[in-house]
Each structure stands twice: as C-alpha cells, then as structure tokens.
Length: 524
Image 1 (cartoon, rainbow, N blue to C red):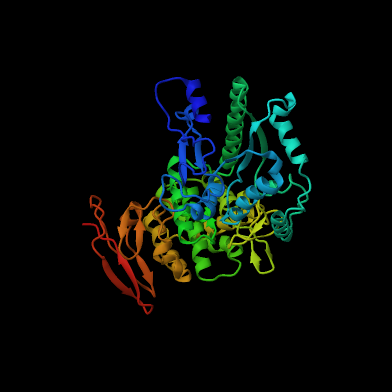
Image 2: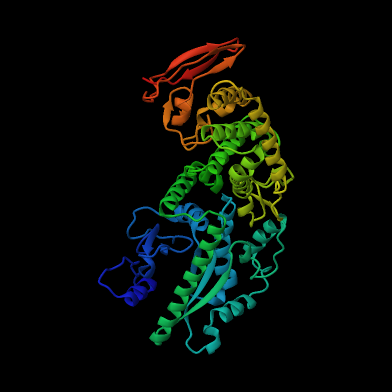
C-alpha cells in the first residue's frame, strides 16, 4: 500500500516492485526471507528510503510457497541481528490491539532483546512504529492522531508483571541497571521512539489513504532523524559502505550467531584513504594502538599518546624540511600542525577509543558516539548503565601537543648544519624510525601494513609495494638511502631522472650485531 500510494502520487510510467498480497485467510505465506523495495517518492533523491519486507517476526510455521525448506531458523536467528542492527525504523503491523501486552509486546521485545547485544558500537537504535490495522471506523476522531493513539495504547497496558516472558527480560535489564515498570518503559530500552498509527477497516477509502499518508510521513521523519544522528557521529553510510557493512555483518552472523558484530572494527577496515596530515596521523596512532593491544600492553590507551609523540615530531621535521617551511618552531606548530593534531585527537577520542569503565570482570568496549546502550562488553553483554568514561580526556591535548613541540624543537636543533637540511632530516628520521619499530615489533607485522598511509614518513599515500618492508610513498623511495648503526653507514645516490621501482625481493643488508634484515628500494 505504501509503494502503490507513493507511485500514484508521483505519476510516471515506471512500475516499482512491491510485495505480493496473500489470499484472504490463507494460512501459507507467499514468500519467505527478506525482500528489499525502493520507495518511489525518494527513489531519485540523495537519501532514498529502502523498505525491507519480512514475513513477520517468526517467519511463519509453514513452508513458504516460494521455498522448499522452512525459513523459521533464518528469520528468528539471522534476520533480527541484521535488520535490527541496520534499520532506522521498524514497522510492526498489529491485527488485534487487545492482545498487545501478552502477544505483540512480547514479540517486539524478544525480537529486539535477542539482537541488541549482538552488535557493539552500534551508532543508533531503530525507531518503532506500531500499525494498528483494521481499526473500527466508529472510534473518536482524536484517536486517529498518532500521538493520542500512542499514549492510549501504552497507558492501557501499564502492568507488565503478569506476563512471564516479559518478567524474564525485565529481570535481565535490572541486572544492567535499567528499572522497568511499565509497557512504555520496556520498549524504550530497545528503540529510540515509539509511535502508534491506526489504519481503518474497509469502507472509508479516503481515510485509509489519509492514514497511510500519516504512516509514510512518520517513517520519513524517523528515518531522517536517525540519519541526522548518524551524520553527527560520522557513521552515516552511503550506498557503497552500507553494502559493505551489511555483507560483513551477514558473513559474521552466518559464521557465529552469538559473537557480536563490531561497527568500529569494521569501520577501521574500511577507513577511507587520508588526504591530509590529520588523516595520516590518525592512521599511525590507530596502527600503534592495534600493535600495543597485540603485544598485550596493559592500559593501552593511557600509553598510546606518549608512544607516538616522538615519531610524530620526527615526521613533522620531514614536513618542514621537504616543503622548506620558514618561521619559528612555535609559529610552525600553531600555523601548520595544531589544527591537524587537534582534529585527529578529537576523532580518536570520539570514534575509536573505547570507554574505560570496568566492573565484575567486564570492560566496556563502546566508544563515545555509540554509548547510548550503557556499558557493553566485547561479548555483547550490557553489564551496567552509565555514561561514557574516557580513558583519554580532551584536556590532555595541550600537554600532549606541547610535548610534541618540545621534541620537534630538539630535533630541529640537532640537525647538522653541513649538507642538505632535507637529507639530514631524513637520515635522522630513519634512525628514529628504526628505533621505533624495534620497540614495537608487532607494528611490522603484515596485518598492520597500511594501504592509506606511508608508515615511513606518515605524510603521504603509499604507492610503491615492497615484498618485505611494506608499502612506501614516492618521496620516501626517492630519498637518499642512509642507515647509520654501530658507527657505520651506507648510502645510495639516485640520479634525478631515475624511475622508481622495487625489484623483486630487493637487496638485503645485514647491519651490525642485530642481524636485522633491511630491504632497499632500487631505482633503475
């Protein structure tokens, strides 16, 4: 009805697919699974509405006509985890409102309860719209208003202590700090909002059209609100990313229904290629954090900023010398690096660092923007209600950035006066880089190789593939190859018109007593 009404309102000759209505009083569903349909009114807009049609919350006990196997397991186990996690709005059609508390509310809450702990760092919860179908035309006029209909339905079912299925869920919520006493408070634990829309029975076709219009407008308003919230936390997915995230979630739940899907972990894998120093700084910090976690560092977040401070300062010396920037170190810090560092720091705190709260052996893994569920462990369990507790606070930025500035000033003063400043800065940087990777050996592992940031200079996109040492940007490959260790050095001068290419496995040099293998890029 929604698709047909909107298609008629926009006109045109294009026919949009719509669900096939079943026969009256037929006990067998026409289809199984979940089918996705386009909304005709928003089909060509920047933010189209997609309508997913599911055969109820239980999938039906009978085999669908289009299937030869029962879809009950998929609908009750796999689909809720995907639909609840990614939907902006859930619309549930009720045929008999008198059974709302004992039947409808139980199904709605159990459906959400089985899914809410199966995703961590979920950007928003879905909105709930309850459609009371076949409403008697003789009701009072004000009851057709969605706000009045919502208040009346929830007020009529205040006591939920008489339903055993709901008591079990309420007790589980109580353990995590939620006090639930009414039919209104219970679904609010799982949905952003609740709206009731009435659809009249046959006979008043103009009113049917009007109420369907209210339903459609409510869906649009709630979807827009959800999208706005996602944009505010930088988790609004375009068509390409939505497809990638849903595929990842479907593959994840197909392999393990009980392990929660982590939005932040998936976002890190799909993180877009950075185009500025801010993005490259963030890529480095996240890689170091992953490496520290792999090495079993306790209090990873608290040590993280100190760990990268010296390397970031060294990378800043490359930016200054490569671009021949003029001015005092203080001026360069404020004019060139402060804004990038501040934005990288804020994004790190808001989007990537988990809450630092711990209780009863559980550690919260939700980040700041996705903490509306409360404290949630990595296994999905919501173990306590409470606000986000940062492991790194905003007021730490100034101290951290001033520390980078002090390191940068010291490094610039240590540069030899003789020779090229750019080459001297590069030679010193290679020494610091080698010490850094010696101290953080896990960072050289293949899983931490970045295709978006050159981990040699932290200032450019990598272009040149190396079989042993990762991927480097062109300026790093073209720079003089100087390694100084144990008082000895070796170098390679490159002619100005040489083309860049890494040959096979390169040439291996064993330097000093450490017997560390380094690969050199050759220009031929």
